[in-house]
Image 1: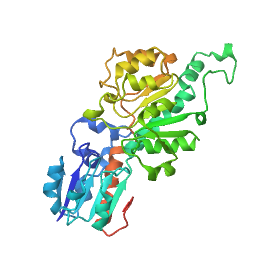
Image 2: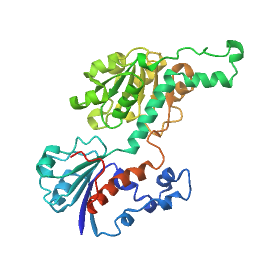
Image 3: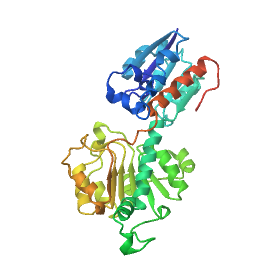
Image 4: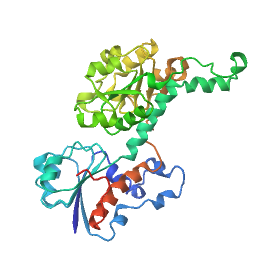
Length: 351
């Protein structure tokens, strides 16, 4: 018998190995999109652990974790804070497995004192979001919506063939600001460095040990809004962060700055953002998330999206979508647990 505790209130840890059990088609279509028969090839949790007797605790609170951790062999965590004193009660623990490279919620000093290995696997889901945020940034600086319309309307007949589209810019001349420096922001910083774009960041916690690795500079909250030519939002939504980006913060931004939000719409005072875009107080916005979702059909953001001069790109909270993101995230976790059970080398070991 092996005992596993999963603390994941978002659901990524087990969702990918339970999709075939779900009856709701709204959940099934995502990995099933390209191949209607493909879902049958996604393994179930029970199939992965067919050779083992497993007791699985799915805990939702710290109190629930604390109640069972003394009997747990494997602890799997996603975006939760495990206090050192709680981890220390896990006398039988053989492995702590975190979903996400940003493993700040795991007390490494305590794990080290317990001689307890810790692994942090990257979230494919998050990489997909970072890729879309970067695609929106490039689309804006290269004015791809205008270029597409230019070709559709055959405007080159009048303007001439070649470099006739205004406002196309070189990204290395600009500064990317990252609001938050978690697991979606970090690949954004890597992309920016590859394009020789300066990157600054703010987070509730500073990461001096990562600043040289990711070629980023830490700045204070107000300075981030003032200095960023592109501001990309990557912080979690909590009661204390709702509308944390308000009219004041938007007013600090440069008049040609571009605002990207692939995090959560409720982080932003949306009417203040809409007003800034309408009055051309901002250079544009790329929004995958909105305050109310689905976006009401009469929301003023639609008109801005349809007016190319506003430089607004909207997508329907789809940035996380990629080929089998849930299945791949779940399998990264559970294959690592199986590696440990079989005495095989671990992947993504951080301790």
